[in-house]
Image (cartoon, rainbow, N blue to C red; front, top):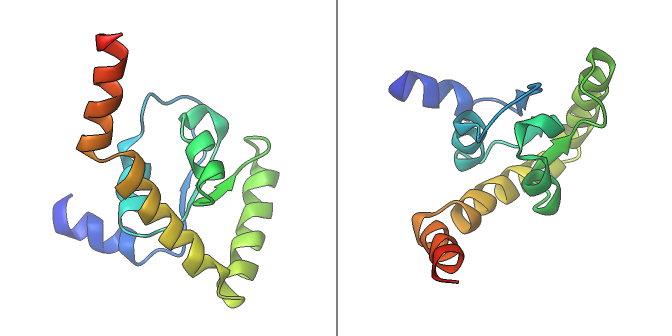
Length: 113
């Protein structure tokens, strides 16, 4: 919890969340907000954002084999310095899409229509 959790996440090369069902997973937002690229399954409800913002990897299937392949992919990206860009993209995703100003504007458009 708290600072210990944030320190652990911020020292990760990638944050994995291959969930089978999620609403809006705060752990992915926390990791992305720390500049850590995320590897997610489609059921996390974050795949669209991760893919569109190039903030990590979306698993094609939620299987052990796909997770293993993504780990190899992330290892290559780490050594070719591409992983740092994914992390910057993850941070930008949170700053641009999930800040309260943006969320408020989206809600206003929904309810004012």
